[in-house]
Picture 1 (cartoon, rainbow over the protein chains, first blue to last red):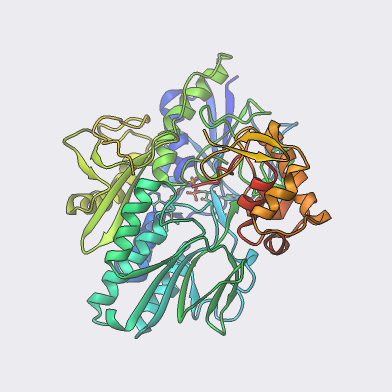
Picture 2: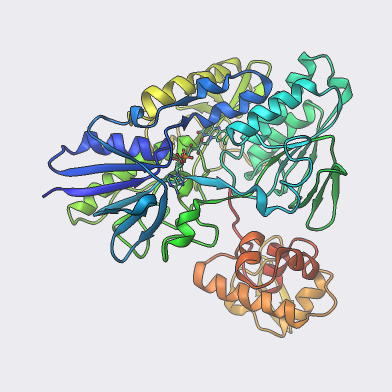
Length: 413
Length: 105
Ligand SMILES: Cc1cc2nc3c(=O)[nH]c(=O)nc-3n(C[C@H](O)[C@H](O)[C@H](O)COP(=O)(O)OP(=O)(O)OC[C@H]3O[C@@H](n4cnc5c(N)ncnc54)[C@H](O)[C@@H]3O)c2cc1C
C-alpha cells in the first residue's frame, strides 16, 4: 500500500509542496492530502497595494483546491491538534487523518491582541494593519479620508512576514501623498524594533538612505509595548512615545494556534523548529516544516518557501526510501522592494550572505540594492508567476534554490 | 580579538563587549558587568533572568529574544524592561556572559 503524506495548510508553501510532490510520485506510490480551513487563497504580496487603491481586493483571492493538482486530495477543515506519537491529525468535526509524513505549512498568524491597547479604542479608526485583507481595505478607506497629520508605520516586534513590506508601505505612502497633493501636510515616521531600517548592515544603509531621501523619519530600537488609540500615541517598553494621527501597525506574529496544542511540535511562539538545512523536525524524522510556519532564521517570504520547496520534496523522497537526507537549504531569499514612482529594488541573500549590490542572477541581470523601473516590472510580474509558476511548483526560469554568488559585489561598510 | 577583565580575569569579548566564550564567565563577574550597563545592584529577579539566559544558551546555542524571554522566563516583558532598561535581551545577555542574541529577520 502507498504512503500517506499529509500537508497542513494550503497557502503558498503547502500548495506548491503538494504539486511538486504529486509530480514526483505517482498515485500508487503515495497519497497526498492538503488540509486548510477555508477556500480563499490570498495573494498576500498584493495586500501592500490595496491601501493605495493599486490593487482590487477580489482580484487577490482564488479558490484553494483549484491551485492543486487534480490528483491531490483537499480537505477543508480546521486543524485542532496533532498527536505526534500516534501520527494522527485531529480536525474539527471529529475527523482524524493518519500520516506517514507530515508537512507543517500553516504559516504565521497575526496576534494583534497580544499588544496592549492595539485592538482597543481606535482600532479600525486611527489604528490599522494592512497584513490581512479586511485590514488593508479599512486602511484604504481611511487613507481616502485622510487630509494631513502624522502617519506612523510601526513593526511591533520580529519575526514578521516579509520584513520589507512595512518599508515598502512607507515608500508608497510618500508617493501616494505626493500624488494626492498633500505630502507637505503629512509627517511620515517609520518605527522599528531593529537598530536600523533592516536587519543586515549593507541593506539597512541603502534602505535607510531611501527613507531619508523620501523625508521619512526613522525611529529605531522601539519595541511596541502599548498603543493608545484615543490619545494617538505608540509607547515602547522602555517608555518612549511616538505620536500619531494614523498608525499602521504590523502586529506580533506567532505560529498557528493548534501548534501550541500539539505537544512536542512547536517552540514558544508556535513555530516549528526544524533543521535549517534539511527542514526536518529534530525529534520526529517524519515531520517537516516549510514556509512561515518553520522556526528558522530565514525570512518569512513566499520566495523562501519556493526555494525551500525543492529541498523539502527531495528530502521527503529520501526519507521514504530510508536514506539519509542530503538536500540542504541555504536560507536563500529574494525580494523585490517597491519604492514608489514605478520603481523597485531587488535584494537577494541567504543565511550566510547579506543582501549585496550587483546584479541578479548574473552580472547582466537585474540591478541589486538599487532602484530601477525593471525591478518594478519584476515585482508586478511576480503576481503572474505566483499563480502560474510558483504554486504549480515549477521553477523560476534561470533561478535555482541555492543563492547565486555570481554578479554580487562584496563591500565593506 | 579584544579582551576585558572581570573579577581579575581577562576574558575574550566581541567588539560590542559580549562574551565570546560563555564558559569563562563566573557569577562574581556579573555585578561589574551590570554596573557597566548602568544597573546598580542585581536583585533576585535579575538573577532569575541571568540564570534562565545561561540555561537557554546552553540548550539552544543562542540567547532568546525579549518576547520569548517574556513568555518563558516567568518575568513579564514589562518587568524585563524595568530590570534591564536598555533592551533586556542584549543587556541581560551581556551580564550573563553569553554571546549577542542572534535574533531573527
Ligand atoms: C503584506 C504582505 C506582503 C508580502 N509581500 C511578499 C513579497 O513581495 N514577496 C514574497 O516572497 N513574500 C511576500 N509576503 C510573504 C508571503 O505571502 C508569505 O511568506 C507566504 O504566503 C507564506 O506561505 P505559507 O504557506 O508559509 O503561509 P500561508 O500562505 O499564510 O498559508 C498558511 C495556511 O495555513 C492555513 N491554516 C492556518 N491555521 C490553520 C488551521 N488551524 N486549520 C486549517 N488551516 C490552517 C491558513 O488558512 C493558510 O491558508 C508578503 C506577506 C504580506 C502579509
